[in-house]
Amino acid sequence: MATIIGYARVSSDDQDCSVQEAALTAAGCTIVRSEKKSGTTTTGRDELETVLSFVREGDTLLVTRIDRLARSVADLERIVAMLKAKGAFLRATEQPIDTSTPAGVAFLQMLGVFAQFETAIRRERQMEGIVKAKAAGAYKGRKPSVPVDEVRRLHREGVRPTDIAKQLKIGRGSVYRALI
Image 1 (cartoon, rainbow, N blue to C red):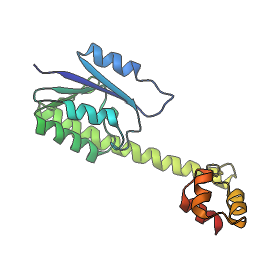
Image 2 (image 1 turned 180 degrees about the vertical axis):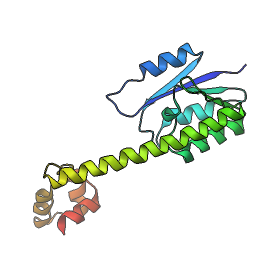
Image 3 (image 1 turned 120 degrees about the vertical axis):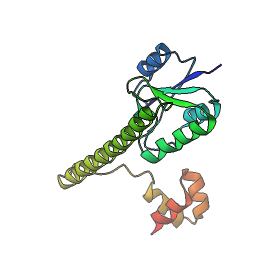
Image 4 (image 1 turned 90 degrees about the vertical axis):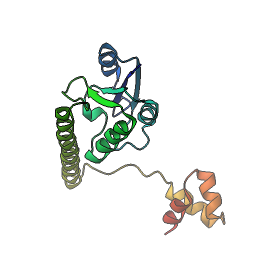
């Protein structure tokens, strides 16, 4: 018997998947997997990998919107190809996507292009904001994670770089950079 498997995703820990999970359950999902990970890549999205490995012939992977699944055309095409190879389908509750129909496939491809474009625009705006903040002196970057003075003090005392790295719980490369 075919199974409808739901996948929900939000980008950050302060967001909640419960609205997506409820919509997927209401749409007939018997299994719903969710995670809090960025959608800009599929790398490190363990729940997505679980769903993709679990899906069988005749099953449907259901998402609320296509951007919950992928934000790049390449990732989207890879996922759809994986589902197709298994004889499974992709559907979305809020968009007319159903890869069991030619129109659904075409619409999916268009949405994938727009999701990728949206990500690129967002990144461009973010970079513009950072440049503006730097010019105003408001952007300082992230706080240093390596205690440079402590690294140098330990090195002056004769502690080897490898031991400094272990003691301060930092990478050995960071020790060498601090000593330059």
